[in-house]
Image 1 (cartoon, each protein chain N blue to C red):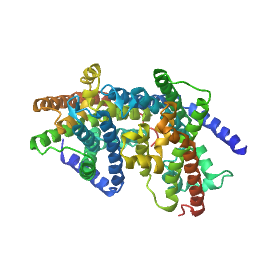
Image 2 (image 1 turned 180 degrees about the vertical axis):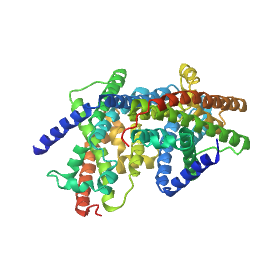
Image 3 (image 1 turned 90 degrees about the horizontal axis):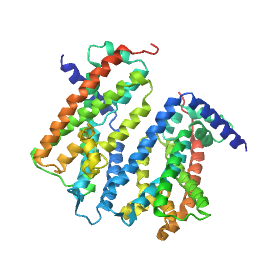
Image 4 (image 1 turned 120 degrees about the vertical axis):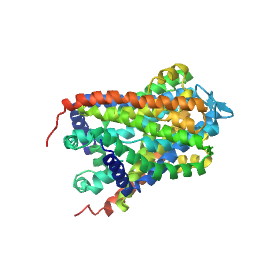
Length: 265
Length: 261
């Protein structure tokens, strides 16, 4: 397997996104509005409380801000793109090309993610930093752990997207499923609220699911809600999910390729 | 009367086409319910850690959310104009609309209705019933009547704002990305306005009056006397915003010169 064609995919997607960069200014505003809503909500929830579940209100604001900005990096519409390509039959051409279709999709997603990291997350975070009381850590080790962690959350999220995308082969129309998956991820990944806020039994269930590796873990590392030891353990958990999710993808993909129906031509 | 007849004809056509793809509707119902459930779970989890949100308790917040779902469902069912620019202006579909014998805005509303969204109103009523029973709310004879007025007011506010946004396309090459932003802002109205600072509160009351779709009218049924004045303003704001939007729309239609090529 040669790597350079995949790297080229990242580059091309990056340039493609660059051409439409003005679309992103409103995106930053939308995210800031969301962060603002949650900031006021959390301030009211905290009221006069010093901390809830070990997080102070400043840490909570930071948590919300970084979760949304990290989302810009790991989020992609690969499931929807795959569904379109499968429905329109374009996937047939994709399959005869000399690369791994799923690998190529992942690289496109990464190109998109890197683009958004530079043009969306960074300016967005600066804007939010100016607007709301956010506590920023300057420890290089925190940043290093965070970087590893969001890269892994990108892979977990992308793998889940690929899985959802592949189901189009069996369901033909899966827009409902795609939407349902997105809502579930928003809640169970810890984007809307940290896992530690859930009741004990729910936390126990969530521990065995991949979702918290998407948002909760990197955000907790960033807000220093985790100790070093916890952070290493959590990253190990993320890594495990990246590998584990690979198995069903390979399995379902090989079944899907056998029963592919190309409509039209 | 002609309009009413056309409305029901479109409606029956719509139901026929939708019933062709039953599994599709089912999945859509399910994912709608799921996203409503997730908002509820959020409220429930949050109130596991606090008793009051600036003086509002858990069931009151749930009640507000339930109320919000009703006008929002009606709005989503009839005002699907978030892609107006792309669908009608860029593709020139508006030319076709203008040849029709009914008002252009009404024609678009008919074409783009999504009746399945109305299911959200049932969820909303159920949520309100649940919260209302916990709060021991007394229902007076005029409450259902006022409820209907408030819901209509909320729908008109939502509709008015989104029609105005759609109108931008007549004057400028607008991007539809303003619409998702408005959906996000509208979420602010689901929570008591007194948790926000006064600038946001002012915006939510007078400029983008989403507070009239959730908190203000709901406050009436929750017997929060200090907000009563705002509650009764709901239908008024609805009429004002909707009227302005229709005037703007008519002006815009006059300006419209076709997509041309």
